[in-house]
Amino acid sequence: MLLFSKTKLLWMPVLLALIVLGGCKKKSDDPQPDPNTPTVASCEGCHTNYAHLQAVFTPDTAAPPGGCGGGAPVYEPYDRVFMGGEGYLAFKASGHYQIGCTGCHKGTNNTDDKNLAHSGDFISHPSVFADEMCGTCHQAIVENFSTSLHHGTGQKRKVTIRSGLNGPDEFDQLPEHQIEGYNANCAHCHASCGECHVVRPVMGGGGLPNGHAFTKTPDMISVCVTCHVSRGGHAYLGVSPGTKADVHLTKAGFVCVDCHSSTDLHGDGNKVEQRYAYAGLPSCDDCHSGIATNNTYHSMHINDFNCQVCHSQVYNNCGSCHIHGEGARIPAYMDFKIASNPIPEIKPGFEFALVRRTLAAPDNWEVYGVPQYANFDAFPTYNYTTPHNLLRWTDRTQVTDGKACSSNCHIRNEGGTLINKELYLFEDNLLAWEIGATSKITVDGKLPTSWFR
Image (cartoon, rainbow, N blue to C red):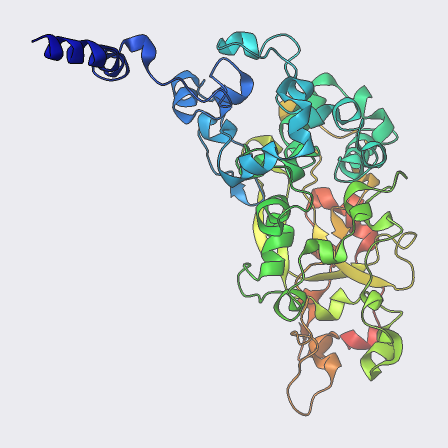
């Protein structure tokens, strides 16, 4: 009996320990979260907790924007701001992560109160204020970008000049409601650093597609083509009806940045009137040497027109911009028009070039309180264009046996019918409100008279 009691006493501490560690666990003894995992009482903790975002999200109050490529895809608010997956891990390992959420977005950290977190000086898209938010580390790029066409300077120039002012420097002098209309429509594509390098472009639905990872080289499809869609991406990819993918894609596998350098995309710090005024734009002869003399057709026409006149396919056009709220009044259509070179001072060396119908109309801003442009005729309603849908053999370079190349390009009179006339922009192609602005670049009276006999 004594032996048993002594044995029981010897085992008692062990039994007590087993009870404490095992069967008699208290609620306060539950395993605690990993201290490295942030709680929802923080910016990062909230935005990495999908269930919590679903519980506290605020529904959208405005429809997503539309544009040349149709309506933007719809992502729920909580999907747009969730950080997860490999992209989030890449973000955590980056220098941008070390800045901290409030270092860029401001607001208040370390709170589970959504309204408090997003109060005060909170910024949802910091790169809108690129000088302050991005320029600290990327000063040269930011300074150059402020005058770039991706920033909208070319488009703003046309809006201000047509409005009776002198250019983009006077854009802020436009009526308040017109600026509101520009920001609500045009600025969806002419955007900020983040819409190429962090988030989806607004036209692609917005939000974080890759866990807040910063992408140095934007993806061609999900970024470039999202904005440069029906007038660029669809042409290059051969999506447009009746077309084939550009030879630079099918033969060389080129993506946008293979030809377009960071200077093209970010600007070079010099103000330019429009995109074709950039000094370092890619040129066909950068890769194709000896163009001027490598065949009879080139030798004959090198000073007549740009390369696209022969090597482009039909391309998308539309007109009378959708900021009226009713969609483009000239719906999208595939066409091909040769006109007098609209920008000989910028693109000298040839008389004729391809042109594309623009979105301009005299009453573009009517729904924003400006009934008519004051100086609408300052620019043609057709722009110089270089469609990204090039082929070696097109409807103009490939002819049937026994016929010359000119049979598919020159106008000729066959029994009173003018063959190939549809390739050229004549004044009778213009609507009444386009004539004053555009008749100066039509080909009327500028083609050989022998073509019409």
